[in-house]
Amino acid sequence: MVYIGWVFAVLCSVVFPVLLSIFLAKRAENVKGVLLGAACFTLTQILLRLPMLSVMSLWADYVVFQSVYPILNLAFLSFSAGLVEEIGRFVFMKFFMKSSKTADAIAFGAGHGSVEAVLLVGLSQFALVLLAGGSLAGYSASEFFLSGAERVFAICTHIGLSLIIWSGIKRRMSGLFVPLCVVLHGVFNFTASYLQFLGVNMYIVEGVIAFAGVSLLISGLVLCRDKKS
Image 1 (tube, helix red, strand yellow):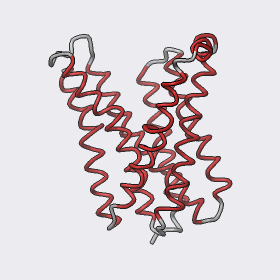
Image 2: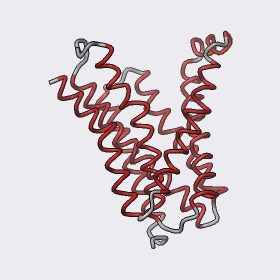
Image 3: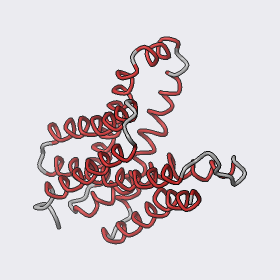
Image 4: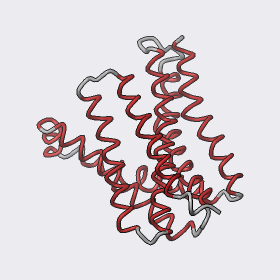
């Protein structure tokens, strides 16, 4: 059963994101949105934020801060992710996407979330099996099932946030919508991390993530309902 769970996690973190991105690029009749979303995550997280956090982890003061104030550290990690990703999302969509189609904004969010899924989760699933010599002893099927499902809802979140940012651009209300998305993103991350810190049942945690992801997706679609073309 654990191997079935692993396959499910791979399908959700690699196969599904890739197929979704291809489908949405075709639907938008333009691959640019997907590529820009992927580039946005790669720049803001892989090339900027994560290396900075790696450097900070070498600082004695930050190590002490993590130990003494774990909840504040969770808040810092959560909202710093929201800050760099949402500002990056705005910059990429405002200055490089140049589109008036909702389909392109959806594709952007899918590209953003898909690269995150593949790089941060999908590749680690393969590395896990390779390093363990093909053995998954010590792991449970539920861990993999939950990990895979979380990626699907995380992609929903990124699409929703992209739609909200795009709607703000089109309505000339970015000054309101960008900070809103930073806060929403930060609260989303912090809530999930804090519940795990408290030792809350993982099914409940994933339920909260699912609810938040779907809610953001629906909110983004509603905001853009009169902007479709």
